[in-house]
Image (cartoon, rainbow, N blue to C red; front, side):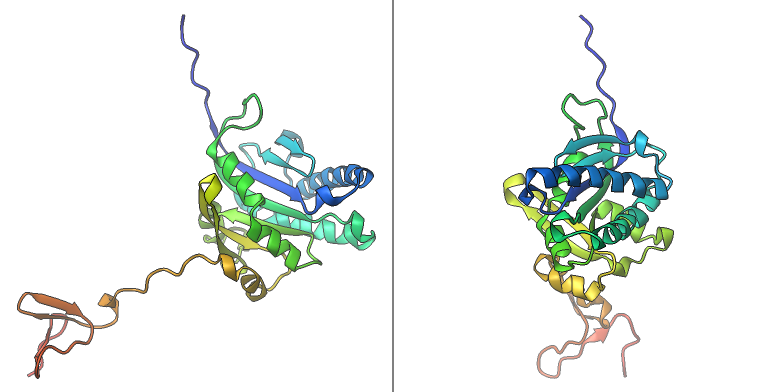
Length: 255
C-alpha cells in the first residue's frame, strides 16, 4: 500500500476577530449582533478591495478566524482593516443603545497553515493568532477606550515585517509592545497593540503591567575607552590600585 502524500501547508495572512462581551447578551441580541458583525466585516473588506468571498473562515458565535487568499496585501490588511472596522463600528454604535453595540478585537499574524484540516486550519500560526485575539492585554486595551470600535494586536513577526518598515505610512510609535505569557498553554510571545484614536501614551499606561522586560543595559563598551593593564582589560573609566595608571587602547597614552 502506498503512503499518501504529506499535506502541503501554505503561508497566509491570518486574521482573528472577536466581539467584546458577546456571551453576556441574551439570545436575540446575539442573533442580531452576529448578523451585524458579518455585514460590517464584509463592508470593511469591500472598502479595502479585499475579496471577502475568497476568505477561508472558521466561525465562532462571537467571531471568526479567517485565512486570507494568497494575493491579499499584508501591509494593507495590517494598516487598514482594524481602523476601517473601528470607523464603521463607531458610526453604527452611535445610533444604537449600549446593549446593541459591537466592539471587536482584531489579531493579525502570518505563517504556515493547512487549508484542508478536518476541523479547521491546523498549524502553529492559527494557534498564535487565536491566542493573541483572546489575550488579556488586548481586552484591557479595548475596555479602556469605550468610544473605540476596534482594538488591534499584531504578532511580533507582522510588526517587524510591516509596521517597523513603515509600509502604508504606518507609525511604529502608535503601537505599544506587550508580552503575553500563558504558562498553562506553553505560550510566551511578544506582540504589539494599537487602539485607533487612542493616544499611545495613554495606551502604554493601560498596558504597563504587560510591558516586556527591559533589555539589559548596554555594556560599558560603548560608553568610554577600553583600558588594559598587563592582561587585565576593562571598559570605561577605571582606577587601578594606589595611583594606578590605566592605558587606553582606544587612544594614545597620555604623557
